[in-house]
Length: 97
Image (cartoon, rainbow, N blue to C red; front, side):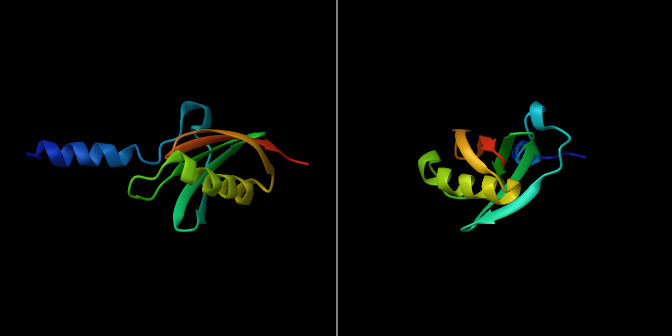
């Protein structure tokens, strides 16, 4: 069966959209929606990773940070002490009491 290169490339890109980094592999995600943005959040002790899973036109990390923060807090029930990442994937350091 012949697949056009563009179709094959598009399919491969979609496969990686919700793939966690190796540190969070095998951890089931918690789906959270914040102001129209959807995130899959994975928790591992006092660290969490969130991947934005919906398409949005050119979001900047600066505009997405508050949404990521809310997603982390909703999924974990903990306070976010710090975050790093970009508009598609962020890692948070959590303070859970």
